[in-house]
Length: 331
View (cartoon, rainbow, N blue to C red):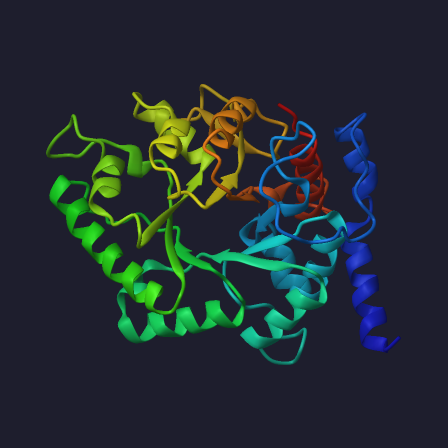
């Protein structure tokens, strides 16, 4: 074993030290983390009463952005594979230059995915990169190198919260989606709460409805962030998040599995917490969504994971505890 590998292993062990003990205390009675790497293959639905398929669980790397920056993709992918994650959604392609003495390349990231039995689920890219035709071709090229089928943005369609503004944004998304389709990619938008607000010029019209109606379902896909959808329902009442999925079958190939805990003092109605530590109605939501019969990628995200205590292990600990809670969720 080279000195570089020894140092990297020691660094990773220092970063995740105590994770199992913390997980055991938090998940009393749950199944311990997998030490091995389960076989990866296509899964058409949860098995044995599980609401989420254990061997298809993914992670949005924004959740562990501190570890990506500090340790780099190699150490991060090794740890994610050990935990049991099988799919990765990107939030950028950079790490500390001190790790390699330079910036890592996208082909090198792809090799690290393959080395650790991981698959790219998608990637969040700034909307501005897609509205610039030359830059979006670079983003599409990166996606293809990484073996992604989906590439998208977590930006709102537009900051113009009028019906006309959202209709115009829908046309832009259709154009981007068509360009992605020419590269055999699928373009998606990830929601926050604001998309569920009502139009400023037509207060009975929900902006999300305008976006759905005016985007081509063959070109523009949706990634529902379940936490933010429930925040939207709290702040702008009148809809059930699961009903959007059931009414638009095939348009939601990805979900952010993000939990929230009720807090009336928070303007959003909920605090973001580790999966399983909150009270969002995930069992009810997933039972409904699974009835659609459409496959989807369940991707864990916790915006606040890097500040999770104890730290270390911080975000790695949150990732492992959340993975186990998702894997153990039963209908």
